[in-house]
Amino acid sequence: MTEERPPEHVLATFGLKDTEPEPLGTGWEGGFKCGEVVLSVIADHARAAWSAKVRETLFIDGVRLARPVRSTDGR
Image: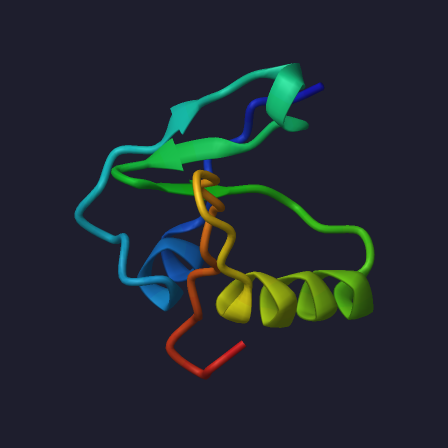
């Protein structure tokens, strides 16, 4: 696995251009922590869109869920 830092245009798309990405390793499938946001590569765009839609509206007492972060183009 290569810990290749997210490109600047990706960081800018999520409003993270002023953060320093920290590699999270294999447990996060090569994701990077950028401030309070974690970026990771997705393999299935349809599943990611479905997951984001569900997590935006799901509220469970006593449970904290990671909320999706939209890119500047709304995805």
